[in-house]
Amino acid sequence: MNQITNSKILVTGGAGFIGSNLCEHLLQYQNEVVCLDNFATGRTQNIQHLFENPNFTLIVGDIRNLADCHKAVHGVDYILHEAALGSVPRSINDPITSNDVNVSGFLNMLVAARDAKVKKFIYAASSSTYGDSEALPKVEDNIGKPLSPYAITKYVNELYADIFYRTYGLNTIGLRYFNVFGRKQDPNGAYAAVIPKFVMQLMNHESPIINGDGNYSRDFTYIDNVIQMNVLAMLTENPEAMNTVYNTAFGDRTTLNDLMASLKKYLSIYDTKIGTIETIYGPNRAGDIPHSLASIDKAKRLLGYNPKYSMQEGLEQAVKWYWENLK
Image 1 (spheres, one colour):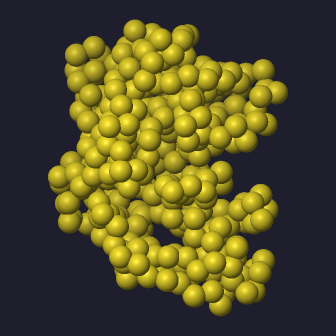
Image 2 (spheres, rainbow, N blue to C red):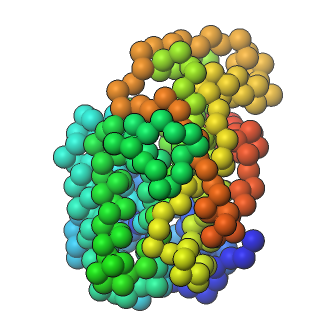
Image 3 (tube, one colour):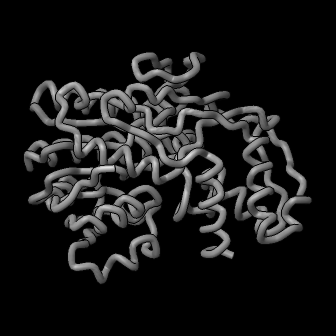
């Protein structure tokens, strides 16, 4: 795959799970990387090893502060906007803060990007935008009504990005992430994602709790596929490929029951007891969609996307990382 090189790139939320993996990857290809993070959900240990790299700059700041945004975009070629407050349940518990960060903060970044005349503004959109649409697979042009405050904020991002292109000529690309997982994803906290949470519970010989009967399904997407999409979005010069949104996924779906079986299989390599741990089933979660499966045809056609890791291949890598780093 072609790589972006010798560019100055701002990664907002660069100390978070996806952001820190992007920072690490981009530094391998002679890029100058600026990380903007307020450490609300980002973690120092994700980027600690990058501090010695002369091409890496950390700015501790908040996207809700326009001055911080202007400072971070200075001299930048591309922006990878990963900063957000994720989690559907968090947005249901505290819609105001989710909106402040995900909408007002996003707007600040667009304004700063416009003022700095960056080449491209690439942002983390979300599969939650599909809302109550029951169509499978999910195709970019066919969305439903949002089912959570979080989903509303991510849809508003797409609307704002479109307006900034039409009004100010700022080139934007939205990447609708589908259940991204992999190394450095935080297993702790009330809003931990399902895979790292289950892995930690199993490693601690605790029974994981599945919301519902385990037949809900997701298009789980390994982090390296997401990195590929961000790089392709920066590289494209095709006018048809810009100022639009793309599903960022593998294009396959896995039920939570199948996910649990795979996790037990891969973790049993390290600890045979894990295979015997029972799973507990709880009530369905508010705001959850039953099934999620992405069509990745648009990304293949316009960006040349070719995801390298299936869910199973990614899961094996992720489990190995968790075992080596968190056990």
